[in-house]
Length: 262
Ligand SMILES: O=C(O)c1ccccc1NCC(=O)[C@H](O)[C@H](O)COP(=O)(O)O
Image (cartoon, rainbow, N blue to C red; front, side, top):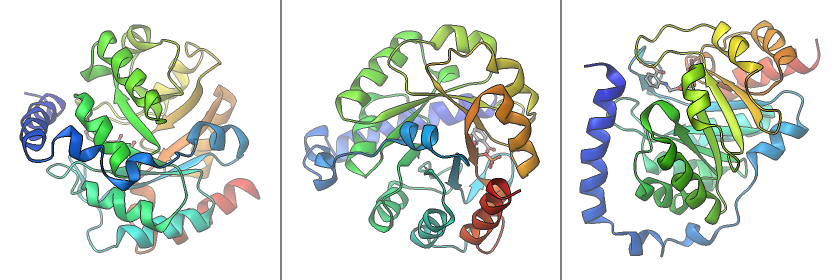
């Protein structure tokens, strides 16, 4: 069984259990549920650097990346660096994240926050809103077209934006529809973990121009971003490259400085 299938099977069990402990009515009563969200799409359209900096402790492809940092310090560092937004991995089993990470990042910064999660149930979208997210990730390979439509409608009704992630042409054709805010191309094949920027380059021209294009994963240099910009990408999701250092905020600062002042 490939890792993505395994993650999704575990996620279904996890969500079923959570629903019994924290019912929707309780999520809707969280103070953050009423919060007015910020727009990541707008920030990416208006900011030359377009960096979405990620908080990621470990991953199936790299095991341990960094377990010694406080998420709020990382968030403050990313905000000071000039990132457009922050991605917070909330999966516990495979990435060492949690919804508390999202809450702590929310308390620390005003940056648009992406809940990076394997969303397979509307419940997780309500959870995202209740814990301070501005954006949810929908992964085309684990959802039907109907689910993508229902989930993005729910997200929008809560004021959340949607970043839809694809990895190939079939996923793109299956899932492009009005109402998505950003379209992300993941350079990492989530089944084999192979990473190639060619994935972003080859899919770029098939993405309608009304979506903000985001390139995700395996970006470790300013040169990579310069290669991707001519293909229309305005957002660049970077995790490991910042998180593997002792000070991800400082690392993001240097990176954005080099990008914007060549
Ligand atoms: O990162 C992984 O190993 C991974 C494995 C299986 C599913 C998802 C995975 N990562 C999620 C992401 O998409 C990345 O964390 C994100 O794009 C940042 O990537 P990177 O800059 O390469 O850390």
